[in-house]
Amino acid sequence: MAHGELVVDERRRLPGRGAWLHRDPACLVKAERKRAFPRALRVPGPLDTSAVRAALERLATEE
Image 1 (cartoon, rainbow, N blue to C red):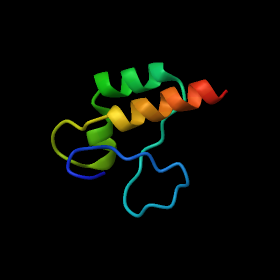
Image 2: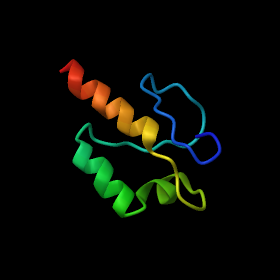
Image 3: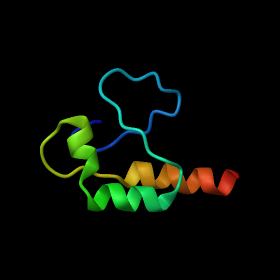
């Protein structure tokens, strides 16, 4: 995460806290609605999920 933006770590190698998310876009919507990412990552305020949304869309087209 860099300055309020979530980073997708597909290789699972980045240091620091992480949060798991199913590949289902509905799970992202639910996590956003419940404000799950700030809680899981222990950060204050909202987070930009655009990188996560783009990664989910990319994965959906690859399947």
